[in-house]
Image 1 (cartoon, one colour):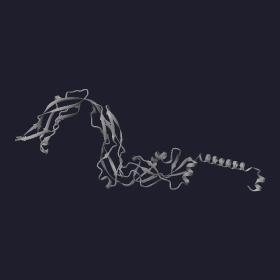
Image 2 (cartoon, rainbow, N blue to C red):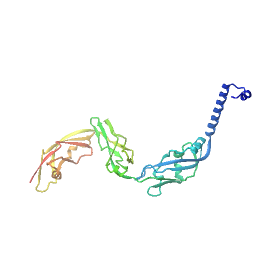
Image 3 (cartoon, rainbow, N blue to C red):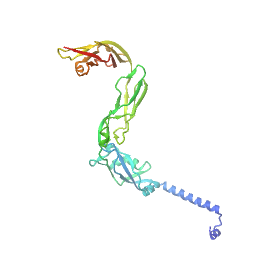
Image 4 (cartoon, helix red, strand yellow):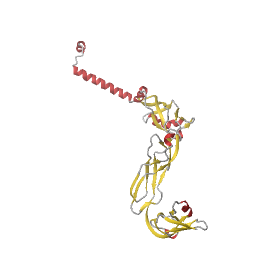
Length: 320
């Protein structure tokens, strides 16, 4: 400090440091207090839209700018005014809110924009009016096709329990999007592995679908439903019949009878051995390579979950 200032302000050096620090803190407090207040101003936000449109990319290829007169904090107005090269904000748009303007062009307009004020400008901002009343997006067309969902499973059941109906997954097929070279060789998509052990009651839940590089799926997960029942086994011996043999052709089956085990939902409402018949169709014999056939069961009661035939394969000999 110059001698003249020292003579005018007889303050020691340590006191000057304290004074300047206090002045700086007071300025910061004043600035924060003023910027925390609510002001009216113009706010512009660059956005890209995300929407599942059949046959199109899920994210818009262009960036639209949402501009509105808002009531918001001074911090928000200041950052919006001086920020450059801001990364576009991604917003999820409902399909019914997008209007078509061509093969790849869509737009949000009118009162629909009010549904997205919080997503675009944030909860702390009150939008007075949109200056840009239409947001236009381009969703490039993509190759796509429908493929089935393949369930990957590792399930064990408690003794005398099993699925009484086929395990269901919904949806059982999805649409895949991507370059033709990528999706042409994809004939199905797989779920994450369903690992369940000691199952003895109904189960349901969701499974994520496996990701495929460079390919987008119309669904990210599927729902599965398992109907599980306790069962009892009923055994019997039934003759093996031959059906649809042409006139003059006689098909002999060895052995001529089979041991059958029926798994029935407990408690059993109807004895399955009363009406079930085992048969080998002549057409199956003709199409077989070595004359060996697997019999089929007819008239299974509704309570039968599954059945097993021993032996599994029968020798068939044709005689004129």
